[in-house]
Amino acid sequence: MIDRFIRSLVALLLLAGVVHIVAILLVPFNVPFNAYAQLIADSPSARLTLLNRTSLALPDLDPSFVTAVCPVTPETGPQLITGMLPDRLWFVSLIGPNGDVVTALRSDAAENGKLSALAGTPADVDTYLSAHKLDAPLPVPLSLMGDRGLVEIKIFAPNEGDRLAATAAIEAMTCLSAMAPPPAK
Amino acid sequence: MLSTLRFIIVVIAGSLLGLASAWWVLNDPRLDISPRLGVWSVAGSEANPYAAARLARSTAGRLTPSQGIALIAERDGDGARLNPACTYLIEGPMPVDAVWTLTIGNERGRLTVNPAGRVAFTSADSFRYDPGNRVQIGVGPEMGTGDFIVTGGLDSLRVTLRLYSPTFASHPPDPAELPTITRRTCPAGAPA
Image (tube, rainbow over all chains, first blue to last red):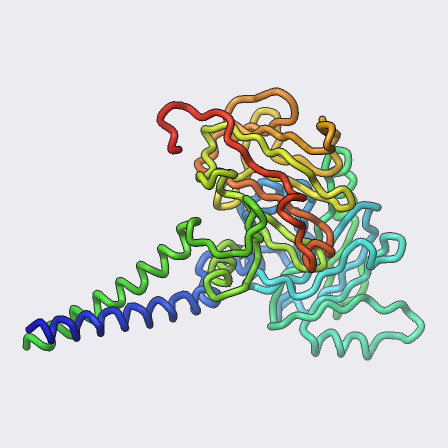
């Protein structure tokens, strides 16, 4: 009787250990409330969306930065992000659906604050760059690991004046399908 | 019949125990084994499967090595859990060559809401430095003197210090180069 009980207890603990390990290992692939995956699905395509600093969309946003996002999905295709960024610390990141930052540029990567970056799958980026005119400046490639992600632009804006300037800069930027014709002037 | 019943009980109890222990390990901050720098733990560390699972659940707040590092404090210098009903002093040196931000929110990343609209201090703010060039930032439920952030209405308390310099990602600062968090006052009945 005691022998059976001990065997059952050992089996129970072994099973608990296996379930524990499997559950921990699966968490990164099965987070049901992943904010980034939700944001990629919810963000309007082909435009930059400013996030409120108390945004419920993304917890843990640094409130001292003005943040905007633009989704890259199979539906949107590769996205060309262009514009002028202010003379402040800024980051342009490509983030995967699980929140991993795939690539990131910082303010010292752009000449005179002028940004031109292309975000998409490696195949899309290669196709775009190989078809690009040789005499035109190439955009900085930002390659996804999977087929979807989020371009995040963050500009350091510690006070209200900086926030206004950063917001205006982002509003003047474009995030457009690299396959689409340029907007009419 | 009895052995089948025993088998079912073992499977159900083992699965529940495994899931419950996984949930407990991921939710109890005392079991957070992220790399520590004094009162601060390094956010975004994937040093082991537990840290990777915690990181996946927190989803945000992380910085890439090219951006810098994010440090999180949910306990004071005595090891007690930070309580938004208590008053704390964040005191010590800050990096002089890097942009930094110090933000007050709850453990789910929601920012404090207060009448002053002050949720953070940054390296761009003017500070009352002490003679040792150390910042002194108060945090508590009622507005205090000097540089202060009111915790207004938070249900838990987390201090996030982000250091925007790739240097810190490869060479984290020494704990002595970072501020500490000291509990000043606490209402009667607040957990010690």
